[in-house]
Length: 283
View (spheres, rainbow, N blue to C red):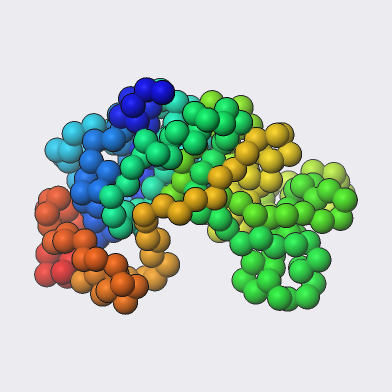
């Protein structure tokens, strides 16, 4: 096994995350992951908040900025980044995340080396049964089985939707590309009778349902093709709130019992590029 530094690329896809979140994520990576990777590729989805200028001026070792001229959303960007990178493994870290403590990436990659059929390692998403769709007990996730059924993924009348969430996860680049990465289709497209049931239309890449069902679909597809998925605990915190300042996110950390990150607004120079947002609003 070669060391993690030569085997791993980090991916982050961002859209209008310059205010606190993206710089704070980079600080947490630098603090807790250090140089345990070859490159950190940051894909910007045509942000309007100054992210492009900031990335192009960012003096951070091993960082590569890709600035898209349109917003293609997260999952399609991950597909493009997987084709682009040269390492055996990649780790996706969403800008709504912070690393919470020391992270030994070598330990994670050893699992991939030990199992050639391992494709993904990350936190587990909700496991919803097809029968739950009508009962309503699945809450906000009750639509997932319907989406999977419309994509012809249901077999024998049921399906296990356990999947690797995309807030942060590691992947074998070869296996990921072998299964075709994330497949994104319109939520009402049915492979079996598209001409009879639904109008043809361009895929809505900004539809959250399309994105989450694409996330679930990758894990389902991979398992059926004989690949393995590892559900592991990673030292990372995903923020679901709308908090947009360093202080608010620090307060959320305290409520969760996390140690203070130590990032101060402007430490990575974002205040010089953030459009129409003076530094006092970042604090």
